[in-house]
Image 1 (cartoon, one colour):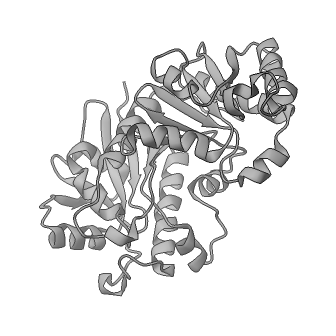
Image 2 (image 1 turned 45 degrees about the horizontal axis):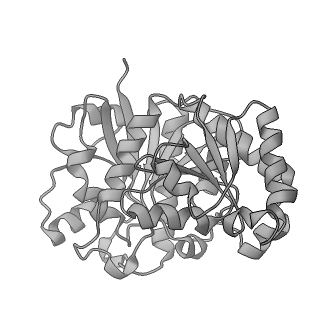
Length: 336
């Protein structure tokens, strides 16, 4: 079986990305399944390594393939975007940080499309820094979709036994309600099913989270369940998807953790985020489907307030890489 290579993008160099990558070095090295290669700036990693006394062995590589022979050293594909580390505004939004973060992602996507890596685990980037660098991307997912020439992409959270898809993400609650439709929810259910199929979970059982308290109690607390969500589940079942719902939001995530459902479809951003991050903030991993490759990510930001201070928790980075190896070998690209 061909060994997998996962690229780890360093994230915004002015944030905690370099620190959590270094702290994860033991988890990023060669394994039975393959190896990881960090795409970033060697000079930044070297500076953070020395400043925090982490004593991680680093080695520059020219290609991902060399990562499999790096031994105990952390292989780094150096892009040299940060020419002078002293010019980097650590812990602050900057155009340099934005440019560097995008450059790392661009190289990773290029390598993935060429088949030189099988997955990408992304470090945290900052939306304001992207704007400072005059990029139009809203975030990682939109950037990856555009760079890879993909259509729609779908986000899934993984934590313990719980998987969460999102009907909407970066929409205000008001806009989500204004745009909520039976057809749209059916589409989300079908796409979530396709995503599970793409990693070998074709017989998975889905649950649609309800919108209103107690799934509206038969219309006592709103009519969205009766007019939109119940008909959407019925239509999805007619199309062959095993979906239950709408299931009250105060119990559906607990039931997923107990193994009753293989995944839950959250109607809006905070509904799913709160469930995952309250259960286990650091072990929550974000997975992107719909790309030609699997992408996993930390589920936290650049944390500029603690950048380069030695206190950043690396667990989410480690989990993102672990999930990348777990999924990359199973993933069969799906067009959503």
